[in-house]
Length: 354
Image 1 (cartoon, helix red, strand yellow):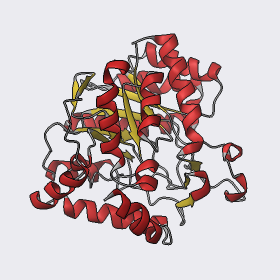
Image 2 (cartoon, helix red, strand yellow):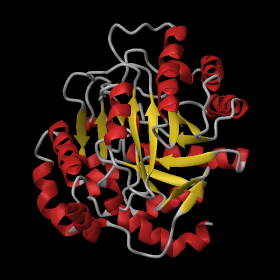
Image 3 (tube, one colour):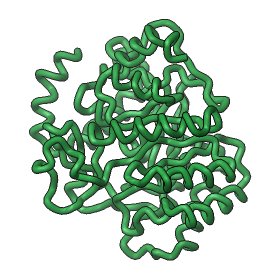
Image 4 (cartoon, one colour):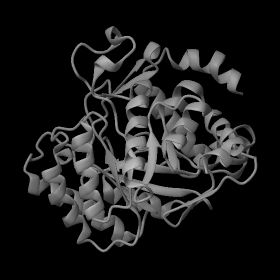
């Protein structure tokens, strides 16, 4: 099946618009997830069947330590099929207080030689109320963890006022907690594709946001989605603020905004039009994971994401200090068998990694 994807299906898909292919995959996955037969069939080909590699992180039990990153399943449509692809969980979203139409097309551009995708989605989603209603109607798969990423509403008329941004985050966070939907929440402060920018990556503004979120009663783990294009000095200040505000963990990290990090920068759009996923994020992410673990020990849960295309690269994330890993681009480039391969390699090496 891996060869079929790589040599038959992928060459066809890569001739089509990535936005169109993404929509087809979301619809197909949602339909397949509705039926026991199709879930079992996907599990036969792509599910993990090896020894127990479950992990308990912040009280949540993950059947496997591999998660789908936020950005792929913005509206929670794939929750029933993903367990059949060896995922132990997914991060839905990012979701916002109000619906967002997203940026103009194209929202994604493949940079095939660079093993990267230019992501310019602009937080396209149906809004937090629609997500809560959707997940209430969706039957949960046992042992599959649902994280929900929260971002600031991205509409052209959105105010750049800091207080307005804080209220926007708090509204979504409060509604999710009151509904009980989701197993953990991630505060996404580092999306590079919004009209209001990355306001809260500034330590002095992050120090205003997090205390306001703490005012909302929450019994679930809360994580922070970190940028990777800031200095270690700024990154460390953000970690210190997260520590003081009882943030349980960090996701390292978001998209790379530096097109100069591409192996073939001439393939990139002439003007900045979204962040880079995939290979250009790998080294930056690993370095920040390693430094965070060295400085803070076990204080933070670390979810490592960025540039995982092989099982060996996933193991590098674990070796650097990640408790769990997330991916999207690797699945797109390498196929749906990648997650099973990562789990098999993790099982073989878990004695070394633990």
